[in-house]
Image (cartoon, rainbow over all chains, first blue to last red; front, side, top):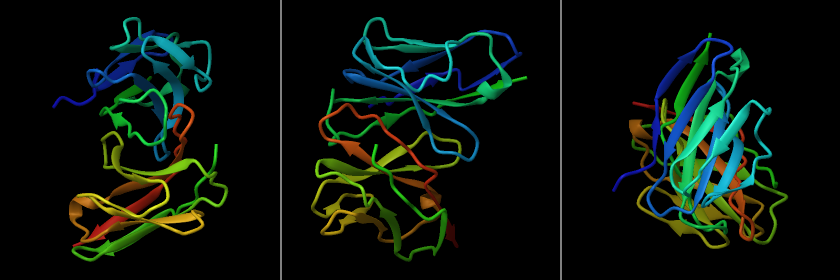
Length: 116
Length: 111
């Protein structure tokens, strides 16, 4: 079946531009996560949605970062006034369960953002 | 969040078994142990998870110490496609699944 998809796969933005990154989770998955991965590092948690509700946004690095999932399926991560330090791979993951460590997360291929 | 400790890198010869260790001395009684791997230029991929008992699936086996303070991911016959970064993480059973990745173990498979 279809996995998690993300678009675009690559994005180059000039410093100060706004960008929007899209995530299409697996159909029926309740939970959706966004992560940021710098080169050579493990993914860092950004935010979590349960259906359309954003339950945790503690990992968002600044108020320039905004995420939404208005209908409980597709999600968009928006970065305003991009800075060079925003350059990273942005990963989206979805999971069937609301809670419980017994369920795995399915990751998309990521969007590589380069800010010049 | 409970923390895990893994070696930065390991090597294995192709077609030999690989044992990837993970220490999680502060694990709580209800934390699940999950393993993910990340191939170059791809998103992380779920490998296996367990709570107390050893687990087997088509990809790997997970051996969990009796005190649960450590675990080992076992790849029975390493292939070149298994070259990846392997992450050992803990997920709370009661809360939502916020995942804290470390830097993982980079596995190199030698032909």
